[in-house]
Length: 146
Image (cartoon, rainbow, N blue to C red; front, top):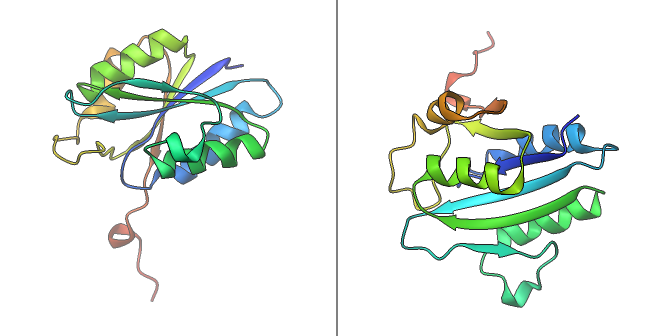
């Protein structure tokens, strides 16, 4: 179904549920899951090998996700890009030949300095491919049991 699924990871930690859904989509189809972290424009972009050496990797959390997904049988790649989040995500999708973009809402940029409320909305409007959106759970909005 999908050959390549781009997953822009945010800094909120809410991407875990999304990654599980993406793994289900990718499983047994040979799909590649391409993880992306976006930093401010001053950050140097870099493609990461499938299983980078931990001592050379600057993002331990990304390394842990790479190792876990790989161990669970997922074909996974990763990349860190600097730049505008919307443009970086769309450019990465085109560069890796993604068939699907999967992201959480709300989406939080790694630096925390950009307004991010409308990033998924902009991606949905501008992308020429499907966008899977996973709402992050907000405990303050969950229904109260009486």
